[in-house]
Image (cartoon, rainbow, N blue to C red; front, side, top):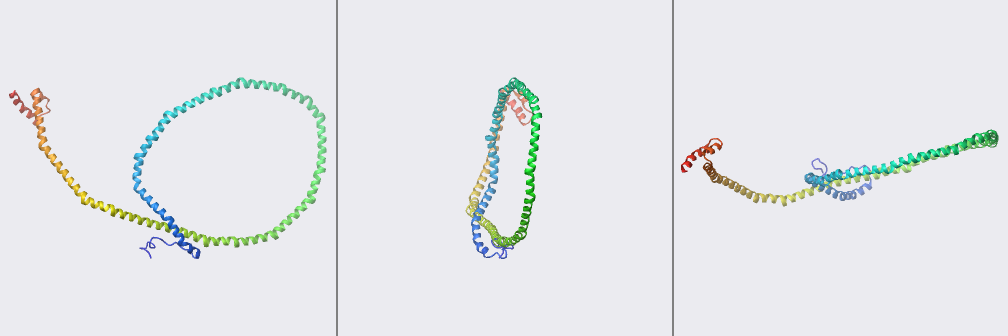
Amino acid sequence: MTDGGRGPVGGVEKAPRGQGDGCLVAMIRVPVRVAALLIVLPLRLAWDLLAAVVRRTDGALRWVGRRVLTPLARVLIVIPAVFLGRYVLRPVLLAAVVVIAALLRYGLVEPAVFLWRYGCVPAALALAWLVRVLVLVPLVFLWRRVLLPLWRVVLRPTLTGLGRAAAFLVRYGLVWPLVALWRHLLTPAGRGLVWLLVSLGRYVLKPAGRGLVWLVPVLVVAPLVFLWRRVLVPVGREFGAAIVAAWRVGGQVSRAIGRGIGWVLRVMVAVPAVWLWRRAGLPVAVFLGAAFRAAGTAGRRLGRAVLRPVALAAADARRVVRVALFGAARTARNAPGSGPAADRDTDLTPASEGSG
């Protein structure tokens, strides 16, 4: 039974079964799928929950990282580290390098140069002179006057005779017996051993190897192939199919739980909130908006009807006081341009003079 051509109902496709899987696969199929479902379902629910939380909080986390953590890290870590490196560590390291260089120069290099120049070189020259006088000259004299004549007169003839006698003894006492032993004993024995080994390989080891080559496929390879084809491959296929099916069922369960939680939130929170807004909040908001607009209109009308005449009267009073104190000519000269205000000043000047 399919659902609109999208596969079996429930979204769980049956794993392809190999022909001749046997009773072992049929016996472990249901327990393996149940165990895989029990293991994979919590993982799939946790994965879907984590994905939903990340999708919902991604913007908030980015804003916190950009607006809070980055400036905080810059203030608490980067700026103190730069200040410490620039104004503390760098001068300290430079001073340490200078001190170490001075100590190395005046505590090691200069004393070593002084000791080499004024101690080692003169001592080496004196030692070379002593070696030459006390060792080389006596050795040269001993070689020229004693050893060389002794070698020419005594040692060379003696060693020549001894060498010839030793060569004679080695040739006739060692080489000839070894050659005879090799030629008349070891060579025939070696040839017999080679023949024996060749015969053993041809008539014993070669048939044994052929039998072993025939036995290995029958006793080792065939059981391994049977085990691989009839046991391991079907069991592995069933395990893979069980994990895939459990993952798909977990996705369906997770989506069903999400839809249920969404329905509960919509029924318990969203619908009452919308109803409360439409029944109470919206009329109150409309009433408050109309009240504020009426108050603003009344305030503007009051300002136009009361405050503007008061302002004009105050301006006229200020102008009259200025004319009374400084005179009409100065006031007219200081007044900017001509207009209704200048005409009122001109009209008020004779009245003020007549009253004066």
